[in-house]
Length: 271
DNA sequence: ATCGCCTCCTGCGCGC
DNA sequence: TGCGCGCAGGAGGCGA
Image (tube, rainbow, N blue to C red; front, side):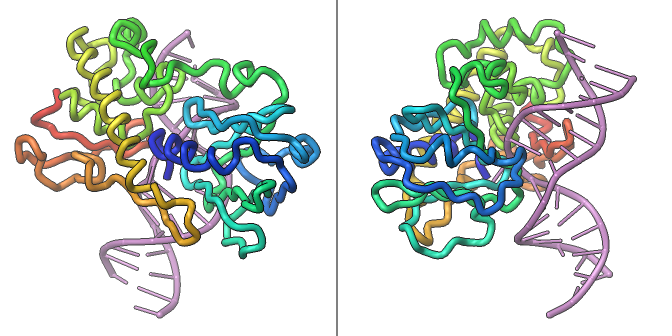
């Protein structure tokens, strides 16, 4: 489920329930996620106070007085605040009980997500140390992206989905941003002019920012017991729209596979 | 260094 | 209905 907008929306949604609370219990119902949930996690977390909930790329960072809990939602993960004592759902693998009698529960059918712990400098953690800039920050700009493009024959779509180049551009928004910039997803990264890279940086920023805004609306109720997250499908131009007319020119949207991932584009508007 | 391919796992929608 | 198949929003890791 989560692309960056959902992760950011989740962060904003859970932080008020977590901040300044103490961890009262740690429940591991199934430790077999992408990596095993550390056996010593309860020992690390119990009795610790949560200072903040941050985000780096698609990692949620729950900072405590003793170290940082690292959460990743993978393809199918979601977090929800529940009242203590209510029934777990199938695929609720991990839960934290807090001093306000609420529980943070990780639900993840495909188990590609992760629950990890570090008491070192979070930026030195192997999963975070070599990540590129955040897409909405100033250090992700056209000068930077143009520079990273040099000598890269890889397709521009795979390039912007590479977390060493820029984080948080997932499969949906890669297609959407390239559509808005009028760039063909298969075009070699090094074969794109400065001006068009400028457009692409702008469209990545705007599509993500807009989606975060939408996420704030459609996911607003996700902490409710039956509040299934909504999705932004109504705002998509090309993703999942193969066979439909392009919203700009009415030519038929095409679907191809690039780096094992479905890719959608308008063959007329994107060159 | 860079790139293409594989992998982890469950659920769902589709065609027969 | 039931079954088999293909596909799904991520991303580390491997071999070439």
